[in-house]
Amino acid sequence: MKWLPQNELLAHPKVRAFITHGGSNGVYEGICHAVPMLMFPLFGDQGENVHRMVARGVAVKLGIYDVTTESLLAGLNAIIHDKSYKENIVRLSEIHLDRPVPPLDLAVFWTEFVIRHKGAEHLRVAAHDLKLDSVP
Image (cartoon, rainbow, N blue to C red; front, side):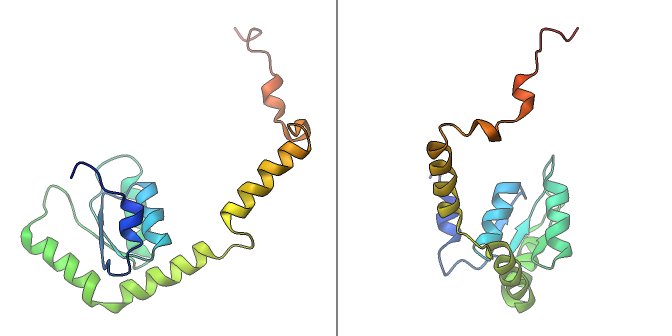
């Protein structure tokens, strides 16, 4: 298939591991759905994201240039059979999802707030009023 709905796949209760490059969106999706990760950082922020997940005990890192069948299987077996990965990601997910107001309710509140206050000009950032033509 050309494309699969990653977030919906991670939400399936039978998913045991998530193989990812470690981009921010995928990391948050893995955390939200409490799925341990096998990570291959490629560039940008991915290396730091992977480092943070490995340090929290929710991921195994593999180098993209030195991956072998054996190292891939060892990483997957570690994630699937060592219960600490699942326990750690469940704990991280619970922390991440513990919010006083669900995100959808918060989005509805702020949308209605802006409507009630006719654009909420009092919340507008002063930087919007800066004149760019005066900068050399």
